[in-house]
Image (tube, rainbow, N blue to C red; front, side, top):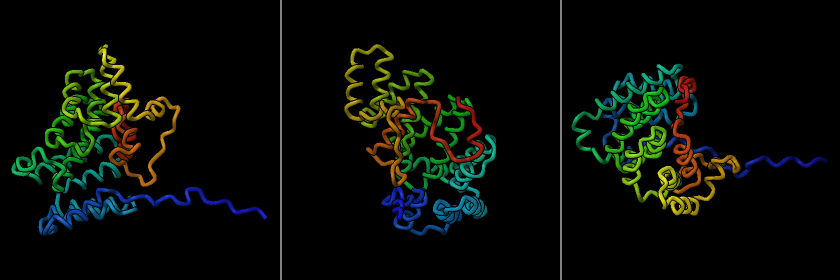
Length: 279
C-alpha cells in the first residue's frame, strides 16, 4: 500500500494579519477615548477593515467609514488598493486620501507632529495616503512631483518608519540627481541595510571614487546574498509569516531591489495600478 504523501509546509505558520489592523490594538491601549470623534470612529471601522479576510468586506467597511467621516484617509487608501479599476481612480483615491488626512490633522497637527510623524497613530493614515500618491505619480511619469512628496515625507518623519528613503534613493539614481542622493545618504549614514550599503558602493563606482572597492566589500560582507538574488542566480524566498522585519533577509532584499530597479516602487494591489506603465 502506498504511503500517503506528507503535506508540504506542514509546520508553516498561518499568514499574519495586516499590520495596519494591528494599530487598532495600539489605539485601544494608548488612544484614550477613541470613537467619540467621527474621524476616530471611522478609523476604528478601518481597523476592522484591515483585519477582514474578504476583499468585498474590506471595501464595504471602507465605504462605511467614509459615511461616518469623509476625513478618513485610510478608507481612500484601501479603495485605491482594492477597488480602483483604472489608473485615474487610483490617483483620485490617493489624492482624496491626502486631502482628507491634511484636513483631519489640520495646521495645528502638522505643527505639533512635525519631525515625529508616524510616531503618532493619528498621522499614519495621511502618511500612507501620501506614500501611495507619490508612488502612482512616479509610475505616471510625474517624477519630480513624486520625489517632492517623498522628500517632504522625510522632513515630517526623519526616522522614516515607512522606508521612504529606499524608494527615493532609487528614484534619485534614475534621475541622475547625484547631489540630492549624496545628501540623502549622508542623512542616513548609519543605515546598515543592504540597499544603503550597495547604493553607496554603486554611487562611488559611478563617480570613479577610489574608495568604491572598499564600500563594495563592506556591502558584500554585510549582505553577501544580495548579488546572487539580483543576478537571478539565487532564488528570493519569501518570509514564512509574510512580514519584513528589521535586519531580516526579506527586508534587505526588498530594499535592495527598490534601489537596483528604481522604476519599480512598492506596488499596491489595485487592478488600476496593474495597468500603469513602467516609467
